[in-house]
Length: 186
Image: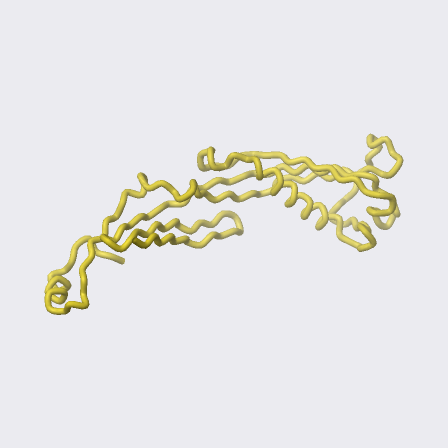
């Protein structure tokens, strides 16, 4: 915590002790401080994941319902939970969809997005258990929300020493980002 002025005691002590140098600190208006590199936080939250599995040799319109929460599959010889596979694939699809997303040009807030992805599998590479159904291809659609937030900024300059720009920490959902401090020395 700093003070806006020097106390009389600080000024008196600086006069008698040459090791003490009083430096002026200028607090800049946070509203006029430009965030370094257009910095902002983005958080993605999936809201709906649809996984379509196409049996080998089918015409892809004969899909049957499958509870992916309880289903398992053998992928490349390893037994996996289908829900975990779909969740990881959804995360990858969201990350890929975010690459061209112009979050730096948008206002703070929430934005709805949809990502689509398709995978094909060689014979026997992806098999649904326990029915032993060989899957030729799969389609994934994930609906998600992008939350954009620009952090509050504090900006101080110490006369002849440099400046400090601090970005507030922020929490959204289960994710937290700690305060970040940038020190620019002269």
